[in-house]
Length: 173
Image (cartoon, rainbow, N blue to C red):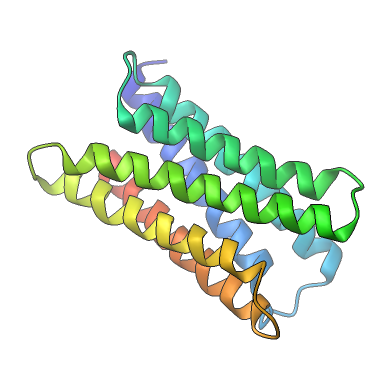
C-alpha cells in the first residue's frame, strides 16, 4: 500500500469514526443507550485506526506524524474507559484524558501544518486540525460540566467530526 493511499484511507477511516461517535453522542437523536455506547466505541476504534494509518504513512519524524500518534493514544484511552468495567469516576477520567490527548495531538499536527507554505491542502489541514482540537477540548470539558454535559459533548463531537472530514477532503485532493 502506497503511503499516499494509506494516508487518504486513514483520513477517511478517522472521519467516519468521528462521525459515528458524534451520532452516538447526540442526545437529541433518540438512540438506545447500548447502541449509542457501541457507536462511540466503534467510532473511537476507527479514529485510532485512522490516526495510526496516517502516522504510519509518514516515513520520517514530523509534528504531523507525532500529532496523529498522540491522537491514536487518546482514542485508545477513551476506548479503555468504554470497554473495561471501571467505576464511573475512572471511566469519566479516562474519557477526559483521552479527549485531552486527542486535542493535544490535533494541536501538534496543526503546528506542523502552520509551518508549511500555504496552499489548498495545507489550509484543509489547518482548519481540520484546529476544529478537531477545539472539538476534543469541548468533549474533555464536558466531563467536568454539570447539567449541560451531554450537549457540550455533542457539540464538541460534531466540531471534531467536521474537522476530520475537512482534513480527509484535503488529504484526498
